[in-house]
Length: 128
Image (cartoon, rainbow, N blue to C red; front, side, top):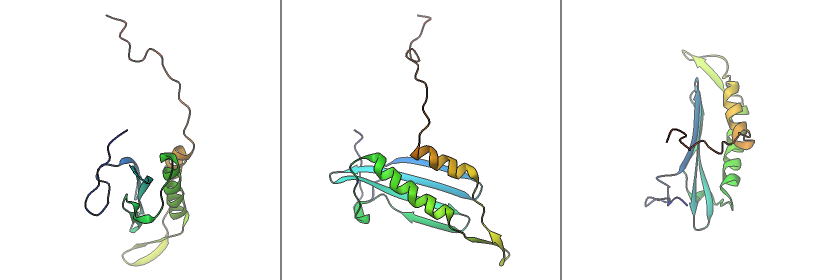
């Protein structure tokens, strides 16, 4: 297993990272293992609105599996992206921020990974 490192504030400095950006919307989900279990960090933003938390155990939530920490962070991101946030142009409100469907698709891929075909001989060089 990867050796995760933490700074003096308890923040992981080398977490596992999944990130994606499309237009003015983006997310970054981090996970790391501690002696107490898996933890997560989250950065989700659309235009000037965002939620952010470091990859640290200070949330008080530890998970038995990395997938459980990921699912929790993805669900928080989905809640955020589903909220209505107004956008403005020169200080005048002109509507709500539209989240590209690709953001939701990428988050869904984390929750429900698509099966992929494995190739038994992918690393074998037949020319030798």
